[in-house]
Amino acid sequence: MTKEYTQRFLKRGSFLLLLTGVFILSTRVFAEKVQSETPAVKAMYSLPEGMKGAEYTGEKTCGSCHEQQVKEYQLSTHARIKIPENTASVEGCEMCHGPGSKHIDEGGTKDTILTPRKDPGVCFNCHLDKKMEFRLPYRHPVLEGKMSCADCHSPHGPDVKPWTSTTIDDVNEACFKCHSDKRGPFVWEHEVVREGCTTCHKVHGSVNDKMLIARDSNLCLRCHAQANFPTIGKSSHGSRLPTGTCFSGGCHTAVHGSNFDDHLRY
Picture 1 (tube, rainbow, N blue to C red):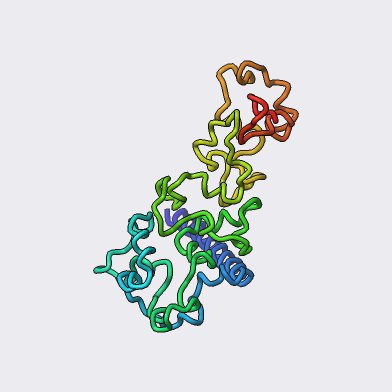
Picture 2: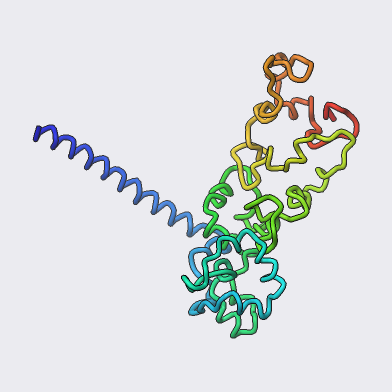
């Protein structure tokens, strides 16, 4: 029994040693990656020079100048998760914008406060899963500094879809600001568009081209599968599906809607 126990112990010790080595290597790779980040993203690891030594002042102080933003913030998703003032020194506005004492003392200068619109690292402090998604092959160019989280999300305002911080007007409005050609109205609409662009697109980043949530015809078959497949609608697609995707194969190219064909072919 003693010999068997010793062997088990050594095996477990070797396994733990291997895990430790992997952890150290991963930490080194992560640290090297941080050094290569854009200046905006690196800011999430330390406060800007103009904020060094700043102290937290509380949300009420912010409202003396930013009355409208504080009023909107009370209806936002972020307000629901703020830390009560009586249990911590950090709550409300300063959870995202950082300590505001120097910002107040300097008369509201921009280099004395964190600005999520210019610095996605502020958002990544909490939304680590989105930071990883932005590293996928097909993504919006947030890490490159060509756009920011605030271009799509309204962190102060109420959201139409819970926990998204997208505009109160419509979930798709955030996308239509850039992709206006997809807005319509179309004579023949693709009804799924009503449910939101995220039904088909993984908007922060994807392993699939066009940031699609599934590859090839599998995307369409998420909705258009039938018990008598490969029949789709009233037509057999057995010989068509292998030739290409539903859209790139030249069959249904107007996937967002069409003014000319009821099958969204063009």
